[in-house]
Structure formats: C-alpha cells, structure tokens
Amino acid sequence: MIVSTKGRYALRVMVSFAQRDSEEYIPLKEIAVEEEISQKYLESIMTVLSKAGFVDAVHGKGGGYRLNRKPEEYTIGSILKLTEGSLAAVSCTAQGASACSRTECCQAKPMWDKLDKMIDDFFEGITLADLLKDSMK
Amino acid sequence: MIVSTKGRYALRVMVSFAQRDSEEYIPLKEIAVEEEISQKYLESIMTVLSKAGFVDAVHGKGGGYRLNRKPEEYTIGSILKLTEGSLAAVSCTAQGASACSRTECCQAKPMWDKLDKMIDDFFEGITLADLLKDSMK
DNA sequence: TGATAAACCTAGTAATTCTATGGGTAATAT
DNA sequence: ATATTACCCATAGAATTACTAGGTTTATCA
Image (cartoon, rainbow over all chains, first blue to last red; front, top):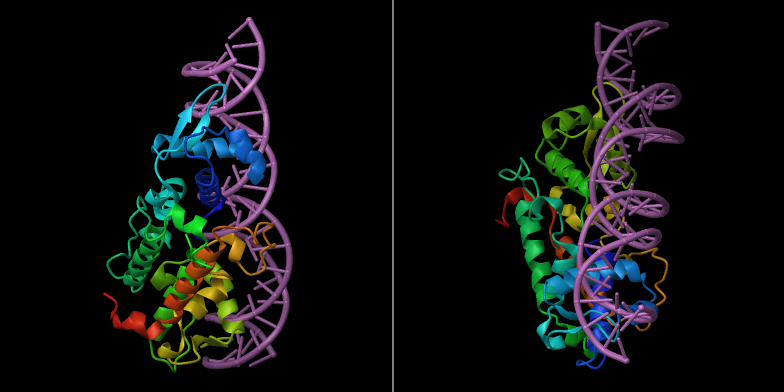
C-alpha cells in the first residue's frame, strides 16, 4: 500500500472543492457530511493543505475553505506527497530514512530507485482537473 | 510504502540463494547470519516460499534450502506478491478488500487501476537474474 | 540407536504506524 | 454577545508489522 486513507481523503476533499463554485468558502462540516468522513480527522488534513497554501481558509461564520488555484494547477503528486509525507515504494528510499547499511551493495537499490521515479512521474502527470474529467476511464 | 520488510527480506534471501551453487542445500542459519536477519523471522518467510514451490527444502543434518528454478525464471513480482499478499497501491483496489461503497462514483478509481497495472508490469518485467546482473544501475 | 541439525508448526508479544477523538482557543460574521 | 468556523495539541483506539518462543517432525551421521 502506497497511499493511505489520509492521502485518499485529501484527494477526495480536493476533488470535492474543485467541483464547487471556486469563489465560495465551504465549511468543512459540509464536506465531511457529504463525503462521510470524520470531520475531526479531516480538520487535521485541511490544516496541512492550508499551511502549504493549497487552500485558502476563512474563520468564523460564513467562512470555510476554497481552492487557491485552478484544478489543473494541482498535481496529484503534490497533494499526496504533502499528506503522505513520502510516496517511496520502500522504506529504504524514503527521505529521512536512516540510511540502510547495505545501500552500497544492495542488489535491489537501483530497482527501487527506478520504481520511485516511475511512481513520481505518474502522479506528477495527473492533475485534479484530470480526475474531474473522468478522462482516464 | 508498497513493499514491507517481509517482502524485501524474501528478495534478499532469494538473491542470496541465486548467488550460490544451485545444487547445494544451504541451511537457513547461514543465510540469516550473512544477511543479519532474524532466523526465526526468516523461517516464516521460507515456509511461504517453500509451500509455493519457489524453493526446495530438505530436513535434517546437511539439509537446507535451494532454488527450484533458474534465477531468470523468477519474476520479482511473483516473489513480492507471494510474500506481501498484494502490491496494490491503495486498499480500495487490493484483492479481498471490502468493496468500497464509492466504487461506482469514485473519481480516482481509474487512476488507481492504472497505477496498479503499471506497478505490476514493472515487477513482472524484472527477474532475480536481472538483480544479480546489476544491469539496472 | 542415539545425538545432532535442520525444516516446520503454532501461538503470542512487542513495536510501530494509522486512524480517529476530545477538548479547547482564536478569528470572524451577524 | 453569540454563533460559527478554522486551528491547535494531546491522546486513545485499531490495525498492521515485525519479531520471539517453544516445541515437533524429519533426516543425517557417528
């Protein structure tokens, strides 16, 4: 498993925002109910998205969140990397991993590196807008 | 993370066997010491490999394990799928996953399917022999 | 035949990560 | 003022992963 619930929730939320009026601020409660996701859990995800400048937030009554850019300007990779921390296929190659003592002689290392690049290219090549279009079906 | 310690250990063990005399039976203890992996943990992995017919086992003194086929006849995918159970990028697409209630309307489903296929093709296109050759560097 | 060495089996525990909850604080509109 | 909303921090519950323990069976060799 390379993408956990957290990352998938983040995608669903972003898709949900992308499908609405881009000007309007939507309270998280509305999204949580619609998507049947724990609001509290979503809050922690939104905070990350907000700090990274992916969404714009307004406090108080009438406030909520909205996207900061157009859907086509968000790659799936950027959203997932932010929320998952890393998309590495293997802990050895994850950033911040305590360097494996076998790195030098590891027969598999080149394979993991190649896979990581492939996965990264894949996710960087898809945008939020692509998901909306259903163009991948 | 798509491949856990278990799958990586399995690969290392298989590589280790592939690098030795293919006729000789090697006791697991030897591999465990060499690779600095818990022997007991390795045992559980070897049982899986043995039951699947990936390795041949002989009990008792002078016994051990050896590969059943040539290194080029094992795909990395077959080894990982066996030990990891699934290589799905997301729990939604993993076999045996309780069907997601959103499958029908999920915007991301086609993307996950495409990714799964890409990963599967990747691992099925590499064999144990390829890892030995260092040809990927 | 007895000692030894190996695979095999079952169960349980430790450790880690993931998911979610709880309770509060700060900001904003009405 | 009050209601509503984002934001913050800590913690608990759940699930998975990694590993350990102890024994049983099978085979070899002296």
